[in-house]
Length: 294
Image (cartoon, rainbow, N blue to C red; front, top):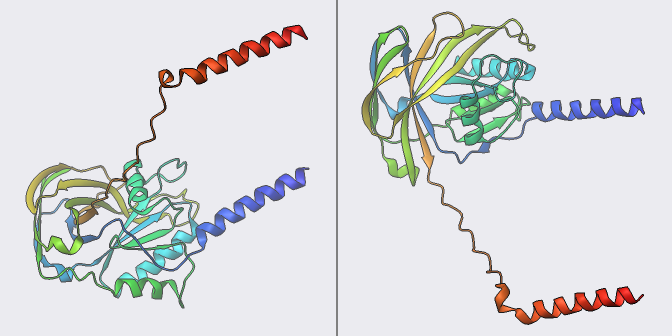
């Protein structure tokens, strides 16, 4: 009996690890395009204007400090980033998490709401293409990732302007302006966000052995859906050190049509069927009387 229980536990663990490590082909995501990436260190002033065609690929990585195959994925992404224009943003698992100290429930929930609930690792490119797991579909993970990064968004003509001015140790003013053809995205809302990222943090107890964890998402601050504006913001604390950076990112959220629920057929009122109720009552009385006789 004990042997059977042990085998069952081993089977469950094996199935979980296999599902987390295996990977399918790249999948299209319908959550809405994500683009941008203009950035600066949080303690430095900056101003820049970029053509939309020059934006790097936004790479959102879902990871955890206990996820050993996440390390393979992240190292492959590092290799691609050394040759191609892309920026990584790592969201760490937080909900029901007992080991990883870097995630937040808000960021974890956002990732799942946009892209579905998956075990790490999972990688999303520009909010439109996802690869889950760590098994290459081609000769290598590097080739899988590079193939996607080499496919530009084709946002058309336009520019984005980003400005950042620190106003304290943990505060600043962000300004932005963009001119982009919204019609290409369909019905929905295009909003600007400030993504706050920690360059690297040390955690020696991570069971995947990485110890120094890069590109950690600390917070996403909504700036609104105006094409330009200025907002004063408070920044979160870094896990360690003084290496926060701020990134201007645009996110499109498609309009989701509400499902029309057909109204249920009305239940007949008791007064509309008095004969049935009366007949049922008489039947019950008769049955009781018959039972007493026997």
